[in-house]
Length: 137
Image 1: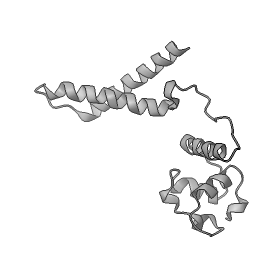
Image 2 (image 1 turned 90 degrees about the vertical axis):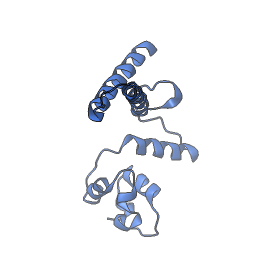
Image 3 (image 1 turned 135 degrees about the vertical axis):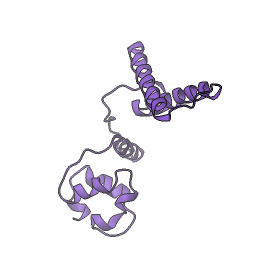
Image 4 (image 1 turned 180 degrees about the vertical axis):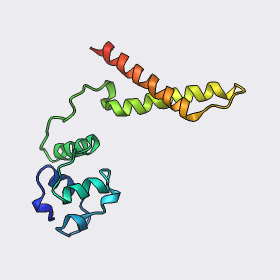
């Protein structure tokens, strides 16, 4: 399939990823080396219309804004301060919770079970994010 045959917004995204002069989607860039991954581009090459990952949509919006074609963000959920997405906040909060758990185990005699600590950290991160959103409204 040629890049020019792709429907928007897939064509725009493919053009952003393009590293060669080839007009063919399969030759324009290495599918595996993109944030969307091989399966995403393979699906498109077969006529599919997979959901574009949020970070890729944000990257496209940023590129358009830099070219003077500002578009409203495609996120529907409000974000907390700092312009981070909920996913970014979740990673931050979960990492901080896990550091706290691991620090508390450092002085203890028991060996932490990392999978249990990770699950608890994610649980606390979700609870914190939910509570912060309630407080922000």
